[in-house]
Length: 397
Image (tube, rainbow, N blue to C red; front, top):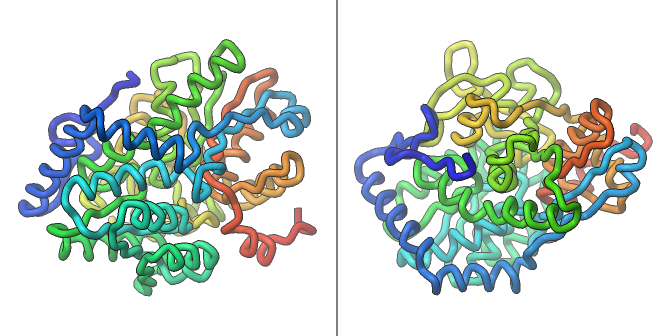
């Protein structure tokens, strides 16, 4: 099962595919061919390995959260993607995609970002390999994640504030994709998750699979066994698919994807696409989508800007259908509580996205005892501190 790949049309079961015009299909076929060639190119793999080790700082360690574990009666481990250069897992695929853009002869990369971690990673990768960079970000997130906006600008990126709709991640994706349609001959859309038309979900998973490969080897080395449970937050789902890829064949390992419940189960209060969505097409691919009463794409919401997307990666939808992964939810308040608890118990400030996974590990610890639980700590929370302290002060928790 670990080698689940899309079919020739880019589908995982009924999810994925390419819902794009014919001109773009020709371009995407070219991207897929070059990518498949690079996977077998020793020079490219050596270059990627060099940057992983000497630039990103891989392998990221697994840390035993002893204080949190003692409190809840389980062994909670953290895969420290927050220690990567730029502070999240996003750098893994951003450097890969930037190198791919160079191999394709492109002069620019175009990206969207929600929380700003993908934007910072793309801006970093563009500076590293010498590409121009346009990053689209919803106006709400520009204000909410101001530190990351400044980082992107310092790195030389052109940050475009999107003022349409809810002014968040979906609109940022809309705008980035529209820009790419006009510039695809000279630019590459460095999509930020395992979403979008084929072959992008496959490409992003390939570069993120390093998380699962490392985690499996590291856990075996530390414990001489595999974890009982692994947990990751799911918006689009790149950090989760990266971790899950290393354990899908191990049927005794329980796998949990954590969606944002936000303020509640009502439409517009959450971004839990697998939990509350239905089949549909968004941004050129088929997946589970949050829809309103008219069947239109609904507004998504999460306290974590990187999770408020109304769709989800096609492979996640498929893994849910075949019941290999259990998808559940965590609310805003549960994530905030976990944010503070990890800060106070372990001296680690997690991203609000990652706090959803930490919160679910705590839930599992209340349900089970004497389990080894591995959490993908996908990013650090520097970007979120001002927002959290202003809106959810410590005295409230």
